[in-house]
Each structure stands twice: as structure tokens, then as C-alpha cells.
Length: 104
Image (cartoon, rainbow, N blue to C red; front, side, top):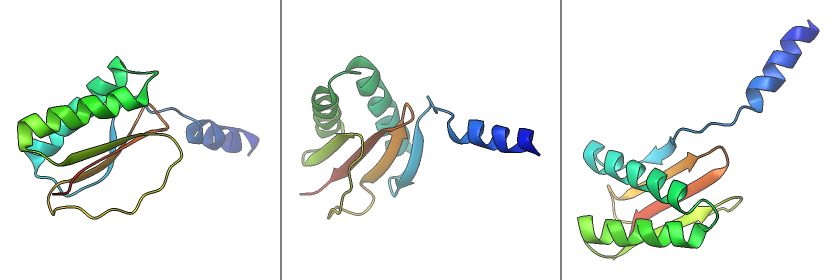
């Protein structure tokens, strides 16, 4: 019985190093590209969330047109207005959250 409790506690503390998309209304192609871009930016700027967000925003502006916004960080909440089919909320590296949306 004690072993089961230890296994459950261990599983709940597991750090996920892969991207975990919590919500997205993007089409499959855009979502895949945005997810790869977010992972690249977070790995490149592991200690600077502002630079990672800037890289994501600039790349999305170039690829899919202007007015993209990105927030990279830990422990934040949000309420946003966005264009339909242009929102993605994901986690990377366990506790790093990324929200990416387009709003003209």
C-alpha cells in the first residue's frame, strides 16, 4: 500500500521536457510550426524569458503577418482577446508556460 502512494507521488513530481499544448485553436500546420518555434526560443534563451518571447513574436510576425503577442514565464494568469484560429497556450520544460496569440 505504501509503495502505491510513493509511485503516485513520484509520478506527480515528474518534470516534462517535451512541449505540452494545453489549448490551441490554430490549424495543424500553424500549431506545429509555432510549437517548434516556442521550444527553440525557450532552449536558446533558457535564462531570459523576455528574449524568448521577442524571438517568438518576431518570427510569427514574419511568417503569419503582424500583430502577434507572446508571453513566456512561470506562475501567471491571463485573460485575452484574440482573433479566432490564432491562439496557443502550452507548457515546456515542466513549469514554463507560453501563450501566443494574434490580435490586430
